Image: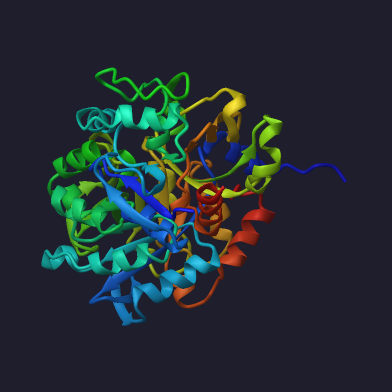
Length: 267
Length: 207
């Protein structure tokens, strides 16, 4: 028996600046978590706090709270939940949905968010990213990019996947990085909720232009998808975000941890 | 023993998480704007939000520098805990500074920028390795392999005498947990490091 070092492990050591992250994503509508398919909410579930505590206890690395209709109705509604969460859950959480300007971001941080993400605002007014990044630091702001494939191109969507911006995903990533985002959450609208795997072609297509940590989202349904997303990004993906696999109790966090351990994915 | 912890507010962002974590450990906690009335405090936290220049600017324009150094140099029975940026300002200077701000100088050296090839900011988790100073081995062995959360674009290197724990990520090494007399510096965020972080924070506050 010799020491076995897999191809994966070598790649990890070379490419990743920190360990692979498992991130739970909660889509929230009217203060309830909703199950979504291709960004369309179709089933109301429990309160965000219920899932957040469950995932925290199970050992998740991080949580994302997405107020999925906030940008449509231009309101902020997550703030009281965030405060409640920050008293009980001692892991980082990213909050977004309806953050339009630096005042919204300031409020989210004051209420206990560690990081915020912008989507609609990044498309409508990229200056918002610059001002938030300058004041709170690049690590505090992420771009949430939502991609839909048209012919052979991926186009950025906004207003929770409803509106076509006409901007290519690559261009949005370039612009956001130049403006000072510290992280990119890239989600495929076509694959979201399908559980058939991430849009591996999309990630392969954009990975070389990404200069900050990137999180893959949309389509996670089997443990093997972790290996595939790592390979299709040449080991550059920083982690994955998922929702349906724990909402429907398909894969437990323990199983994910065991998979990573067995496959030398540094956690 | 006094159980009051103060968090210095440089007015640069979220202090709620660290306050919640401290209160979770049954300490009373106050967010404070200055260090004028310290009699009741057991510990002062220099929190980890904002940028180097802004934090130093706040400290100097509110005459906090001499208060911190007084607590440190005269070994007052108050513990100083710097978290992330709060640890970095305890060094002499930082590559983050645009106006060449002077750090507190409690630790020697300059805070450095993380190589762009590692795609900073580093956001995520890593395991602590124990430093080489054998004097710390007994009290701090519990830190070994604890998985904790980092988010930073700058890093510190410290004399091994002061280093309790460090991170070694593919030979990129930096200080994670440092100490000098009554000043403790943490590069990671114990308030965001799950159960491991809470345990570390409890030990740091009670030791």
